[in-house]
Length: 333
Ligand code: NAD
Ligand code: TDX
Image (tube, rainbow, N blue to C red):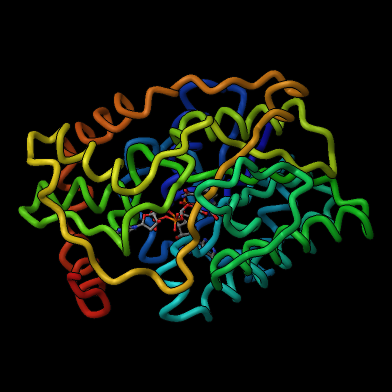
């Protein structure tokens, strides 16, 4: 099977590529990636001779079209993915997440190629901390940020192309991922690399916000499950019952790294900060038989700390720049 992986040099896409190479020798992989600030070229270096890597924009039809024509399946991970950046400048989010997805859709439509579109639970907005509800496939879309609204729009484009043009597509909406190769702008790698750099971890607002954590390998196994067994035109929610509040995440990192649990700062809250996300993945579990394997969050966190400790060369070149951007907008409370 020839698979075109867009965004394959980013966090989840690169883990998808590495795991697919290790576990599915029948798959022939091409990565299309714009290599924005979020990509790290060195991630794919060890497998460079096993895959084809094309540097290009999913919104550029002249690059996308011949690659799609040459594929049996497109898995679309490419996106602008960081909420804080979308608040500072939404333009690239509109361009990549909306125009880029539209461009891919027109191409898979033209060449009759299957698409799996990767999305997020943030399209459903947020839940109160004490709400017993969790998101399901029928929850109404209610996104909060420029990031989540452009992801929501991209999902709706995929659904419309399925309905109107019979495009062969599936969608999955996953909760917060963690694991190796995640950019140091995101919560968990930021705090681990802060500790490794002698910087106090930073918690937004009161730290009570809840995210539903899933290991990136469980996400990618679920993506393959949907590709293999999902029903065309359908959406599947991916989550591993991993609700944890941000204060617990940060104090766990500090404890696992041998620091005092209160050695962090509260900083300015994110505007419009979603309070809680929670996924009910019953459909994926019962209809497609998927089960997560990396469900012990504390041990997953310990492995992730070990990975960042052992791979300073991977993150250190961009660390100071990321912290300088944050320092310009976030004050210690
Ligand atoms: P990331 O920011 O780490 O990687 C995104 C990749 O896409 C980068 O390699 C970047 O260079 C590439 N890219 C950006 N714009 C592009 C363009 N116009 N053309 C081609 N490539 C482009 O993101 P991630 O965390 O790996 O997320 C991957 C996907 O998963 C996104 O669609 C995101 O919305 C979704 N998602 C992420 C999470 C999470 O917790 N990180 C959870 C659920 C869903
Ligand atoms: O320094 C920080 N301190 C902090 O308290 C950072 C970077 C974040 N936070 C908080 C904000 C959120 O409540 O931690 C939580 C997680 O923040 P992010 O890592 O920025 O992730 P989030 O905004 O939840 O979005 C992530 O999960 C869903 C991904 O970035 C998205 O791409 C995905 O769709």
